[in-house]
Amino acid sequence: MEKDWWKKSVVYQIYPRSFCDSDGDGIGDLNGITGKLDYLKELGADVIWLSPVYESPNDDNGYDISDYQAVMKDFGTMADFDRMLEEIHARGMKLVMDLVVNHTSDEHPWFQESRKGKDNPYRDYYIWKKPKEGKEPNNWGSCFGGPAWEYEESSGEYYLHLFSVKQPDLNWENPQVRREVYRMMNWWLDKGVDGFRMDVISLISKDPDFPDGPAGITGYAAFNYCANGPRVHEYLQEMRREVLDGRDTITVGECSGVTLEEALKYASCDGKELSMVFQFEHVDLDFDEKGNKWTDRKCRLTELKEVLSRWQTGLYGRAWNSLFWCNHDQPRVVSRFGNDSPEYREVSAKMLAVCLHMMQGTPYIYQGEELGMTNVPFKGIADFRDLDSINAYWELTGKGIFKEEEMLRFLRYKSRDNARTPMQWDASPNAGFTEGEPWIMVNPNYGEINAADQIGREDSVFSFYKELVKLRKEKPVIVNGEYRLLDPESEDVFVYERSFHEEHLLVVCSFAEKELLWRLPEEMAGQAAKRVIGNYEGQQWGPELMLRPYEASVWEWTKGE
Ligand code: NOJ
Image (cartoon, rainbow, N blue to C red; front, side, top):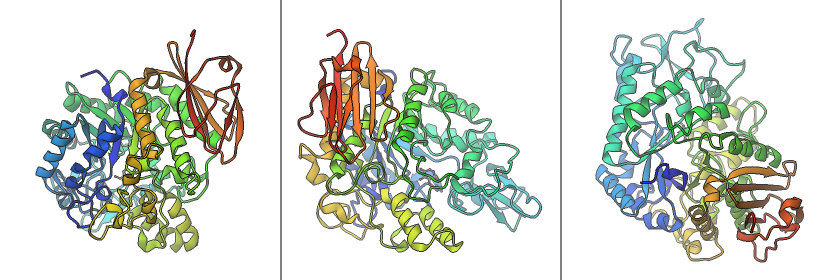
């Protein structure tokens, strides 16, 4: 196996609850996934990242785990899992599991023991603190609303939960906790899985002083306050020694609050910690000035270019990027940075795909993104299933911060449920996702947007993604080339160059709904460039490129030819 094969790979993320239901209970399952592996192979996916499938009471759809070594009954059995893994490998693909070890479910036996009292041997598996002046130990807010501390009458102490009350944070300072986690990871790797996506791994080492954040700090802004703690790199290096060394794996750390300097440690090319990280700066740009996501503010293209370019050049040759627009926590990209009107949906979805897939890093495609799936016209709060969205709605409207209609507008724009409606397989009832009642509504546009329509259609978003995935395998410049942003001041176009030895690529993406002309830098205008891919017919190379709404094209030349 080639070293660092994951640098050339494309990862496809499956959110199992919403992917494909094989038994008609309205919930996606493992056998449903196994039945769709040929579809993923056709797209060209090399690796599948599976959001959690472990036993869980589903407070946060499986991100609250009560047994790390059992499969959730809704999803099937361990035998189904083994068969799925075998079928993935038989197609030459790999499987990455979600590793959620910043916290467990409160129904995990460790927590059940821990809350029994101060003398319990499991007490120290979690973070318990005495009240401070009769109140919470500090002012951190939970990511899902309210304080990050829950009081337990019986012992008179609070436990920390950066997420929901049903997701108590594990105490990584306790070596026994770390040993348990490493043992469990080895168990899965021995079973044959190929790596881990590590949920909020940047949060595992808390500041031992548990200092207050700035006054009034809440939610997402507060957990940034305890990200990249003092021992996080020590823990990950220990994990490498205890679990990953000597195994051929792919690991990606979900690193909320990560800075470029920190990422150079997490994802350094020396391979001491992780293969790569997810950073979130580009998808946090449309938060408000206090770091709250509930707003419909749009970010400027210049901001987006600045952030993505800084990560491209900052990690070049030193660490490895992962590239993503979407995941199960983000709204649909075509509705966010593109244009989801019938006229421009496909063309802008393709433009966004070009913009991301021509960068350096490992691209992640989130289920349905390859079809240009859009945000969802949820009617009222009863349509939502995500606890983050529901809690925020009641909290913010309850306090009078937002009116109901306003909050619904923000939810339609930003709610995680936009990504969680069922995968749109075909135009049959419920988009071919289930023969039962789906656990969450299906996007009513499945008649126009579905896989069956797109698989064989040459000009579909699916075919376009397939082509982009293929190009990555064919052109070393995409994997290895140096990155240079052109025209940073433009609010209309995102243009960059990639170069590797004599090979050059120019990537031109218009984010504008209008036609415009873009003038090439002089040194490029004379090159005999060939078009590699584009989202319109009849694209012409010349000193000035004429760009139609959301037009994207990639041009290639070899210096000296
Ligand atoms: C990040 C996950 O992606 C998200 O879905 C989850 O709610 C939190 N971590 C808590 O596990």
